[in-house]
Length: 371
Ligand code: DI6
Ligand code: FE
Image (cartoon, rainbow, N blue to C red; front, top):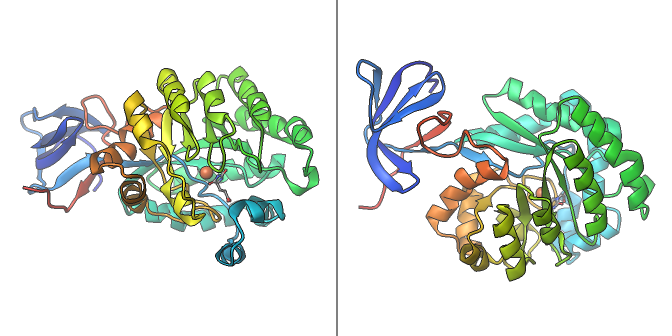
């Protein structure tokens, strides 16, 4: 429903930060004006006791990409690991070929059904990464496609430049030269075009070292951009500590993170983004240190990681369920993980909670609550 001016959603069940309570929410021109203090004379919509939560935020996706990875899926079913496939020249690099071959319009057209699936679940904001171009033109093209989505659908898009996702075949084994020749110039060009909201990297044995990631982060921060990191997904390489040193918005995956990493994330105010879809799809067995995150007070977010290889999913509700079932989050942690903490992982302070002065990004659910 499109609410423009002076409307009160009445007789609602509000998922407020302190818990679920009956009440009302007053909205004017897209902003929450009052909670439980309905201005007199405003148009009133009776929600008949339905649940109102903040609209959901998917804070980690690779939703813009070309092609598919059906062959890799079969290879992995036959016993190849995600890393085996990558080292044999498949994996991310095979999606790079398909993405380079796609036009801007084709990239957008292939992405929209994935976006629509998320919107149908109450998502209002999606983070979209580059990282399947790995040449200057295609990295820019991916980010332009991401920006275009916000003009075609009622969704807010936050972009992350992920030039340091993998090394393209033409630079294989020459990671530093790739960073110098392609990744850093692409970052500058994308930033100059207004295409970059944050900078991400993949710090892993099959991708970039801590020292190489540090180069990318230094370049990002020289441009005034915040950073985030794919860290400790397949091994413990030390990316989380680097992310914390750079006051990253988020560190993502974190299956192999430890108690010291949790302490560092807490000290730097960095959000731990959990991606149970990737854990599931690559048949990972090591779970992220959720109890350590709780003990140290690290905010936890949950996202789909929507991508054709390690997390081919377009359901944030399923990701919430998986975070509870596979990682033992509580349902209220899962809700915070796709609302307030997901907004924080993107550096957004105007969405993700039901509070006065916040954008009226809300979702209304036909759901029963426990007595
Ligand atoms: N980790 C992931 O889960 C995605 N990227 C990354 O660095 C997977 C990307 C892919 O397999 O295509
Ligand atoms: Fe990812």
